[in-house]
Length: 259
Image 1 (cartoon, rainbow, N blue to C red):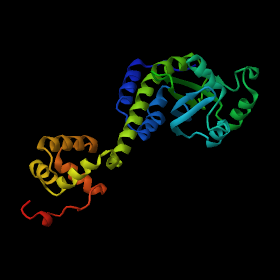
Image 2: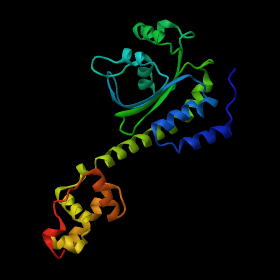
Image 3: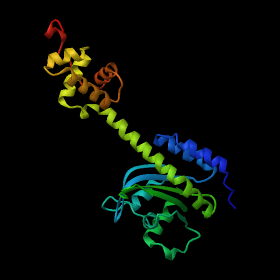
């Protein structure tokens, strides 16, 4: 029989989950901390767009999950479909499945054969739709060394909403990091021009005079540059611009004598 859930440990587990902001940390949490209440030997989770014929993954994270099974459930149109995922999409309820304890007639034969070949053995899975209901997260645990009974339903109903929030936080961080790696794409031509003069050490007054625009306009553009580069000061903006190669020395001081 499954051990009872320690409520204090569960609260601590959720608290530790709230501090996770990378996929690597999430997998580490699943492999170590989560094992104390939900033992399993393989795991996959993801966030994707929902289509009538399946799910188009935006991002997947997995641990010890058979890549062959993913290839088997991938359809020619690129969407992923399985009997259990389809059941969750239809009901939004925790999915519990054990290959040795379920009537095989209740499942699509082709999918069942693929699942048998995968060696995954069983499933405890759940997910969360986003507010638009166009996307959803999905968390699936396998090779669970005990009957996947009501204890797992209880745990997934508590854990998965928090795991969903963590997954969204991770995806937002990935997006922000990617944006920070390509800051030049978000700067306008005028902002790049202002940034070049910031890198040359010019003040807002000097830049306004050089470009023939109001000092207030320069200040607004510099503020926009700081936001887009995700920095707090002009010096940080200049350092990041130089490091990323966003500006070149098109305006050497020697061209302007006194400036």
